[in-house]
Each structure stands twice: as C-alpha cells, then as structure tokens.
Length: 305
Ligand code: 13P
Ligand code: SF4
Image 1 (cartoon, rainbow, N blue to C red):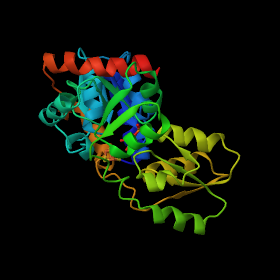
Image 2: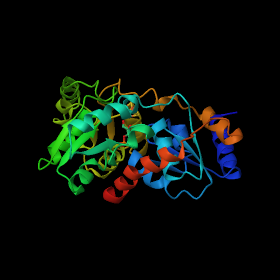
Image 3: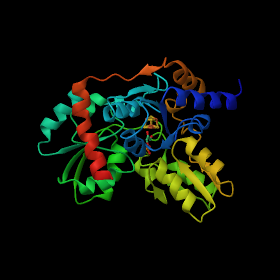
Image 4: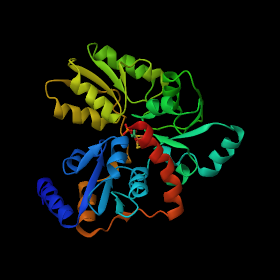
C-alpha cells in the first residue's frame, strides 16, 4: 500500500467507524493531511468540546488525549501511540504541588495544559501558550503560582508585571535546550530573517525574538507577514509546514535539534491500525478525576475565549 492509499483507507474507515481525528501541528504531515482538525493545544481543547463523532483519535501526546476525554467523557478517546507522553507533563505531581500550595496561601495555581489529568485536579485554572497572558490578565487574583514551565511562566510574568508570578523549575526539554547563542548564529546566517519563537524557550532566546507565540501564533504571524525570511524557534515541523504552505518565503529552523521525539512517535500506520480495529490505547480516567480536572479546563476556555 502506498502512503496515499493508506491515507484514503484511513479517511474511509474513520467515516465508517465514526471517528474524528484531532492532530497537533507537531505531528507528521502525512497525519495532519488526513485529520479532521489540526491546531495548537488551545484550539484542540476547544474543538474537543463539540466534536460530532462518537469517537476521537488524538494524534499528539498523552495530556492532549486526556484533555479530550475530560471534556467529552461520553466519547471513546484513543491516543495515537501509547509512548507519546510530554515529559514536561510528568515533571510535577499532585502531592508535590499540594505541599507548595500550603506555603503560598492566597495564590491561584495556574497550570500549563501540559500537565497530567491527576495534577489538573488541584489546579485552579489551566492555560496554553496562546492563552496564558490573556488568562493571567483576566484572573481575579494578583498572586499566581505558575506550573510546570518556568520559561512560559517567566514570559507571563514579564507580560503581566502588575501581578506576582511564582515559578517552579520545570520546562520543555526540547525548547529549553536551545541556547541564546543559537539566535545570534542563525541571525548571522540569515540577517534579513525575522525570529519567531515559542515561549517555552529560555528567556535569553525569547528576548531576541521579533515575535513570541504558540505554534498557531507562529504560523499565522509568518503567513500574514510581508517579510520573506523567518527563523523558526519551535518544533521543526512548524518550519517544514510553513515551507510547504508558503513556497514564496523561506523558513529556517532555529536549531536542527528542535525535534520532539514524543510528537514524532506517531506513524501513519498507528493511525491506520486504530481506525481499522480500534486496537490502540484508549484513555480511561475515573469519574472523580474527570470532574475535578474539568474545572480548570472549563475556566481556561471561559477566560481564554
Ligand atoms: P502549543 O500550545 O503551541 O500547541 O504548544 C504545545 C506544546 O507542546 C509546545 O511544545
Ligand atoms: Fe512536551 Fe516539549 Fe514535546 Fe511540547 S515539544 S510535547 S512541551 S516535550
């Protein structure tokens, strides 16, 4: 079977088996091509609320599939590949944050959506990279404990100086590995290029950027810009996708090491196997976790919309 034939089979089988495919923009292009919806983590969360199909296959990482299940508990939800877990989401657990909370009375726990369902049960509000600043501003509290990403948290703290934002030492190992010197080197090679970066990068990288935003934010900015060259500081698939979509512009990854092995672990064959025989990993969460974790996701959608 060729890739195109497999894609055609997936389109037929997902219709036959009433499955909606939601894909994060970081997954491989042959998968985003056959998805019902592709977006950043905020857009995927909003979409998950009103998908018409009875079943959802999430192509991305585990916390995204858990978010779909929390928002649509009556649906069957599969994760495209059981090993696809965001390491940042596992860095802090519920017990640890409960202890920190005790030392910070009166603080709102703002959890990046890249957290486990269990950790979300004790968060007050969730955010994504595209909604964090807006939600921090809208929140009716000026004291925020931001978990787990200290880089996104530092970006929020800078954008909302009127609030006190406490940070813990967590973060994305892929984005945080890019050093500030990489920006200088890329600019030396491409002096006309604008630098667009994800706020999961360290402050020394973010400070040198022309634009800071989520995966969708970066895509939209580059497409709307009159500039012709861009250095892209997020997972390498975004530079690739932009190059396909905008052949008259040029896109350079900020670092060739910006590859998320978890997002890349899903193959078209994984997708084919699940739509064909529903043999993948189904997300199962207990009712208590779903109810408790849903509060902070609903709050995110209420304040971030
Ligand atoms: P977005 O919120 O931009 O989709 O980012 C998700 C993510 O995991 C980035 O590394
Ligand atoms: Fe997690 Fe980083 Fe991969 Fe995003 S890029 S899924 S934050 S490890």
